[in-house]
Structure formats: structure tokens, C-alpha cells
Length: 258
Ligand SMILES: N[C@@H](CCC(=O)N[C@@H](CS)C(=O)NCC(=O)O)C(=O)O
Image (cartoon, rainbow, N blue to C red; front, side):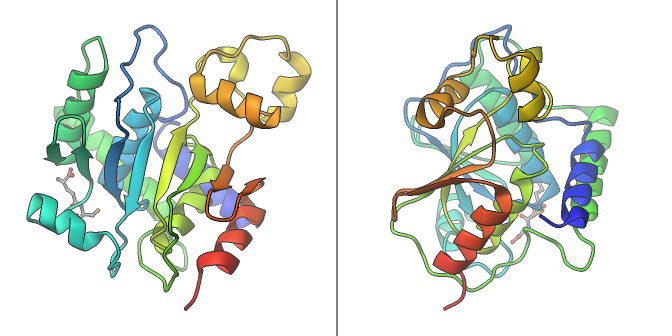
């Protein structure tokens, strides 16, 4: 990945104080039986606040990208909520849909976390939104990445991406998935122990014996022997790969254009 892309992604994560990095481990989150669905725009400052909380609660989610100008999932979203507004959460477990990022965050805490928690309020909410807007700005030099639809071919089945919200290398992949309107199961890969902080090379050198506690970390370790994101699985072609630059080339070649 070009150095500029990486640096601006690091700046975006910093603007949000690296929220969406660690999972809350003190209280068990209840995993939804059926995967939640988020109609999302990667670059949208409000959507980011929701994805951060999903990541911190360690909840997987099916993302239906709805970039500006997109036609693949926007009509569904309009049918569900009656308005063209994102983020929109649909919970197939309860049949409920929720608009408004703060209400979605409250809903997630209420239904899936066995401890109190809610969206930021008052001044804290304003600061969170300002930081999220700054994160979008950091990724907007030349063009707003992850905001506008680009021509693409629809996959038959949703893709699968292991990622955590603040991951500087995962963000450009999510931006491209959004632009190409490619649905994907977002496997949140938040860190549940301090030994999981830092780049993979550092961790494997110093903390190779630390037990893995997060379900998705265990899963990826079983699948690949590694703990590294982004990791893309495409069930349509049986391709599975690490490395953001290679994943993006694969996505462009397989689904871009038309
Ligand atoms: N107050 C809402 C604001 C959401 C919002 O303004 N989202 C923008 C995208 S950043 C939107 O839905 N735009 C309409 C569109 O893209 O059609 C929230 O917190 O969820």
C-alpha cells in the first residue's frame, strides 16, 4: 500500500482516538443468533461510530454497502426504513430496524451486552462526531474514499472480511468494498488482551505463548495459523488471502468495472 494511503489511514484512526481497537472483555456480549445487518457507508461519520461499537462488542455483522449513487442495497434500505438514511440497522432476530447512530448504539448495548452502556451524549457526542468527521477528512485528500459508488459486478454470495475498525490496513479494503457495493460479513477482530496490541511481528516475537481469547482470533488462527488482518475470504471463488494491497487488486479484478 502506498505510504500516503497508510499514513492517512493512521491519521483517521488517531482522529477517533483508536476507538474500535479493543473489545470489552469484562462483560460477556451475547452474540446475535442470526447475523445483524448494517446498511453502511464506510466514509460516513455516523456509520463509523456504530461500527466502532460493533467492534468493541465483538459482534459480527453483515454489511450492505450503500455508497452515494449506489443502486444495489439502497432500494432495500428505503423499503425497510422509508428514508434514505445511513447507518440503518436491521436485526433479523427481533424483526426491528433502527435508524440514527445513537439509537443503534443504544439498541446494541440493550440487546447484546449484559452490562450498562449507551451512546455518547451531550458534549461527548459532539466530540465523537467531530473526531469521526476528521477521520473522514483524513481519507478525503483528492477524493472521499469509501463514499461514492463505482461500477461493479454483484457477487452471488457475500464476501467475508476479518478486520477491526481502527486497523489502518483494513480500512482501505472496507472503503473499496463500499465503493464496489460488495456485501460482506464483517468478522470483528478486536483485541481482547494487551498482549494482542502492536503489529503481528512484534506480538509473535514477544507474546507467542499468550492464550487467544477472542472467538474470531481463535477462528482465524485455526484457519491460517496467523493473527493478521485484513483477511478476505471469497466463497464465490474459494479465494482466501492476507495483504491489503493484494486483496484490493483481487477485488478490482474480480468485481470492478462492467
Ligand atoms: N443523525 C443521523 C445522521 C445520519 C446521516 O446524516 N447519514 C448520511 C450519510 S453520512 C445519510 O444518510 N445521507 C443520505 C444518503 O446518503 O442518501 C445518525 O446519527 O445516524
